[in-house]
Length: 267
Ligand SMILES: C[S@@+](CC[C@H](N)C(=O)[O-])C[C@H]1O[C@@H](n2cnc3c(N)ncnc32)[C@H](O)[C@@H]1O
Image 1 (spheres, rainbow, N blue to C red):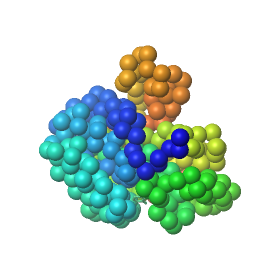
Image 2: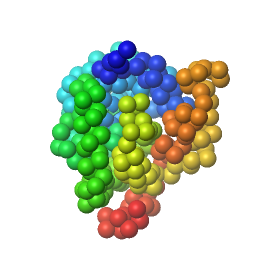
Image 3: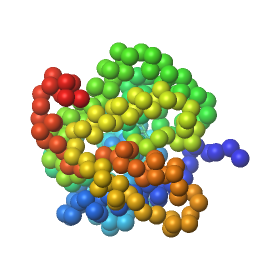
């Protein structure tokens, strides 16, 4: 049967949401009043996680797609009836002045690949327009980018710089971001994209104090029970439930306050 890419897989959303829930409840002990989420797409993992926490604060959601935000507003208000959902229809780099100074949680699931490739192609990609044809185009684009090392350097540095600007200018209680290996269509098909994304993700991770040993301990659980076939085994322990694919910690102010020239050397 052909997979329908337009529909969020509710079980997968819930599963990844459980990982965020586990990390948030162990790493952030204060009342959560303000959350910022970057690039949700037509997905609701973060809302699922916040629901577990009975979130009743304000969530600012940044995405440059108006269609995505229309979906998010409706879906998040349904999942989080006591929360206020504020949509920011801007590019990430244009959104920093539109979010508050004090942020309890900054969350973003699997957005680094999208930030890189949309910058390279100058086109909007979001899940609504996804189909296998588009995925094939994306694979070709990633390969092209891989062989264009000056663009890789320029774009990934720009992406890291936006996070650095965000982390420097806001008071953020906890940053959680994941970048596990892409969905089943891409899995094993492109080492090109993996290499570029991993590098960029790790450069952002350096800007935070993420304790991989602690994160692995916190992620070592079975959301669906120990015997569940789909959510058990090596694929998940190597991928979604492995600290190498997560940023979860406070901002490392020492590294973030280094000036831009030094940052390049630090990274
Ligand atoms: C596919 S989603 C990311 C994955 C999703 N969060 C999940 O959990 O599955 C990517 C989203 O990023 C948005 N996006 C891409 N580049 C962006 C940018 N520079 N600024 C803001 N949004 C961007 C797209 O509109 C899309 O909605």
